[in-house]
Image (tube, rainbow, N blue to C red):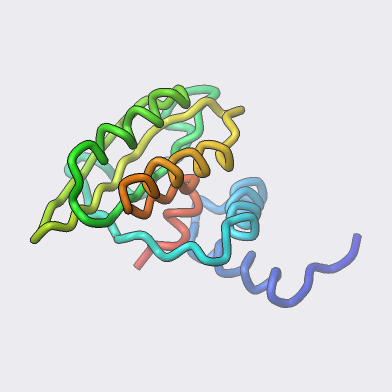
Length: 155
């Protein structure tokens, strides 16, 4: 088996360090694939405030068998209907919303949603549909697998 290129090896090491004790070969590979498949122009989403009763170490498996936990972040000018459009798109994808945090400040909004999707859901297609809905409102919407979000946003 060929050895990974140095930049990929560095990515794998960084992900494994970020996941700490929760790092398994499968989980590191899943996060690395998500990072490598993510659009290069994707901006880092805002960091959510910790939610009461939710630890940062919850795994996607906690959402139930056959489910994949995702984090959706959105930001932009506050426009009526943007949250409804995002949640309607998630519902159409079969998502179960687990947590929502929204803030509006001087005409701008941010929202962070945690949701479970079917494990066999096409995350790329769901991400594209959410981005298109956000674009219609002039908002940036990002969908990430929870593992990727956690690896990117650990202190």
